[in-house]
Length: 101
Image (cartoon, rainbow, N blue to C red; front, side, top):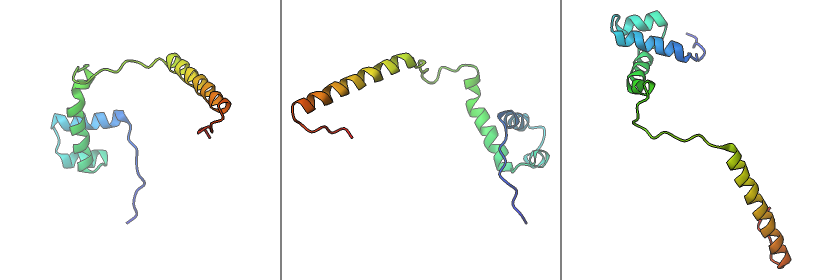
């Protein structure tokens, strides 16, 4: 018996299968045969959907991260690079070895 290559399913397909499983109109074995999937996979997708369903409606259970301002980060990197160059030149002027490679 040859093994079939690994399949990657879209998020829409996973959601559709999980929703049909939640409806409970068909048994797990029937769904597995209909969608050509192992029953454990259907159970996992169903569990994931049930656990994360509240996130769809904006559940405030977790902290919301602020968007990162790349301009500020790039400016900070530039300032730190200038400081490093200045300090390296000062070390060389003082006759001390630089640790930068």
